[in-house]
Image (cartoon, rainbow, N blue to C red):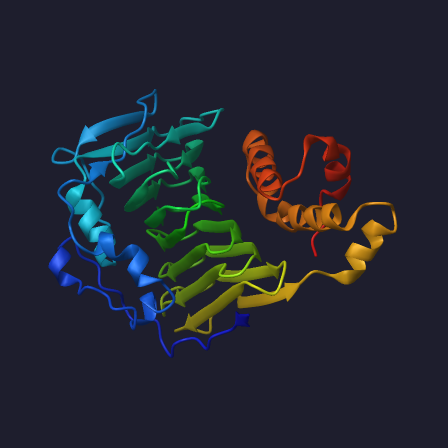
Length: 383
């Protein structure tokens, strides 16, 4: 089953606060919670004194700082679980890249949870004219809630990759906010494969003109997984741009994905260029995909602004083409799904992690190493 829900009439300013009590306990009737299976996330709606704090291995660019002493940004949580996590973390994972520094290899942060339920706060800052790639590998074997806060300095170029892949039993609730400086570039990619309930809320703001944001997502849901990606891009600076491209494949009874793409262009944001796209591929009759693009313009003085959403089933012609060349139907379906994600993953700068994610997707689809030649032939296929 697939539904396309009408957008709200306006994108009103969102409550942002570090005070837990500023947020009511959601019931599931609220617009921002209406798709979520509330019973599965109920444990994160109240502070848990026994919850641990996500940790990572310190390195040249990674430090662990006591939460009370951490130099936090001005960003504030916009929902109750994130406010609880912010108040509950004992330490903050900090990633720092200095001004004019170019880091040739990806900075890999492997998050580990010390308890079955853990809170996390990751603070990433890249100095002016620096270049770096940061990869967050989430511990999908624990329930986790928290926030990822990113600052990209003037003229800097940051690629960030968030990977949730693991057993289909756990809950992950994350807010991910990026603030982009003058003429800076940010590419944020979310890969969601594992987890029972995963809700990720990427958001973007601009601190000066000329910034560029590219938000990418690839998600693979197999019943009864629930995966929600709720994006908010606020253009309040002139001559900035944003691109949002998310693709998902669903199979199995009870599989449910939600993509919400909110873009708000303020009156002062003249000369901006924005576009968002969500495509969903249904592999059988059991899953449901909700796709809701929202675009609100307070000014007509823009270069371009648009959005698109599409949900469909396998292209029978592609299956026939592959089968006519001796490829069994099941393998043909797997190849088409893998190719469906290629154009999103091709935008990730790290060749190693592009390959790694494709291999993870192939593994989830049940593909073997014996099909390597066929996979290479299919690169670039996009149903």
